[in-house]
Length: 90
Image (cartoon, rainbow, N blue to C red):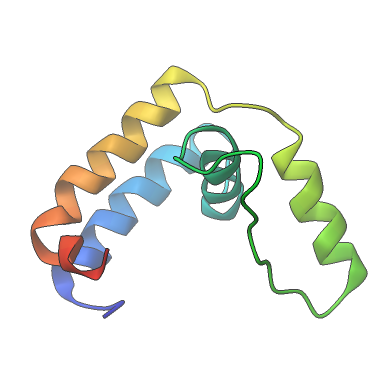
């Protein structure tokens, strides 16, 4: 489900673009879920952590606020690149 040449290629392209902006895919994922998804105030997100510092880091990422428009564009481009092969997992 999480492998395949097309998916790996799309993620490499995405990772290169976000690294240029000093961002990580984990940060973008958390900030997107909190600020741009259809989740509402009554919903929750389960995070996995084996150390308290990981929880602190994740919470700090979420508090950074919404993603900038150019980063949102990159997430949209990533989805366009993979939706033909991964849209069925939704």
